[in-house]
Amino acid sequence: MGRIWVIGAGLAGLVAAERLSGTGHTVEMLEASPKAGGRCRSYRDTRLDRVIDNGNHLILSGNRAVLDWAARIGGADALSTGEAAFPFLDLATGARWTIRPGPGPLGALRRAARPPGVSALALGRDTARLLAARRTTSVAEVVARGPAWDAFWDPMTRAVLNEPPETGSAPLLRAALLRSFARGAGAVRPVFAPDGLGPALVDPALPLLEARGVRIRYRTAAAALRGTDRLDAIETADGPVALGPGDAAILAVPARQAATLLPQIDVPGPGRTIVNAHFLAPESGLPPVLALLGGAAQWLFRRGDVVSVTVSAAEASEVDGLSREAALGQLWRDVAAAIAAHGGTVPAAMPVARLLREKAATFDQSPAGAVRRPAARTPWPNLLLAGDHVGTGLPATLEGAVRSGLAAARLAAQAA
Figure (cartoon, rainbow, N blue to C red):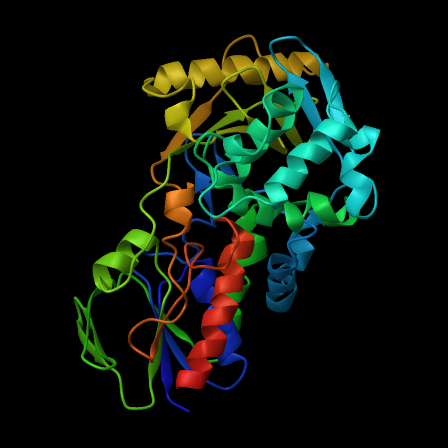
């Protein structure tokens, strides 16, 4: 068996390296940054003096590839599973309710699984139209405006696709819902990482890979890829990495870098910005996850005394164009209102906080962007692609990243 080079030590790259090294392949990795994990890692924030994730990701019990990955590397103990219940709070009216899907495919249509004022007929009609949506259709083109739009389709589209319904791909939303809410309560139990995603999905993989002889060369970016009929060399600042006749490589970098290194392929353009704000708020009384309507914040996550809120598709939100201080102030007002609604202790002034803006946090998940996703195979038979932008059929999620890594590993093993 030849040597396999994995370019990029994000989640997809780590998954590919683990799968290949576990089947006896010699694997080496190149990573441009000083750390592994990409957009799925944890770090200690100096302002908060707490460990936070570099992005808020919601894992569901139906995300079998992610959960199997955690179990495979020894990270499952760093995860905990909650009940299939999603509390909502309308900040404009103070109304509160909880979505509780029932068992089986029809569990999402029962009364307890629907927002107030949304009939099973209306939700079922929208769902049927979503199931029949064409590749070029947006969510707004298939779901009706009304109570279900405000209380379910709009927040769900923004959370899953990082796009408002007017521009989000209906087929991508459909793919996510078919693996979660469409399967009932058993597939939508939220899975939490009390100590951060890093200890569950990234950190345990590193000693495992090291024990298998996998070397990760950090701060070693791929500057260019060379070849004619196949990939022959990977250019780096430390010099070229030559690939022998039986060698293969997996390019597991974000879409923009992949297109720069391999201009022969078409990739989706950059997606929208995601804004995350983290606040120190002990005794908040908040649940681990809370959907927010009627404010700037869309989803709230509590881990210990850190309360985090997310604004997806930030360019189409109230925080667009605001300064750091103004955005934090607006988001804190939403958090304070949520704390008050849950009977928690609201600090007299905004506490220590951190605002993170991740531009192009996902690939473009509009219909036009979704159809540009590349396949795992490239024009060079010994070079494969991995990453959540590759055509897995799923949105830009952790589940998509893991599945792409597994698919690339299988194809690379055949090519090597």
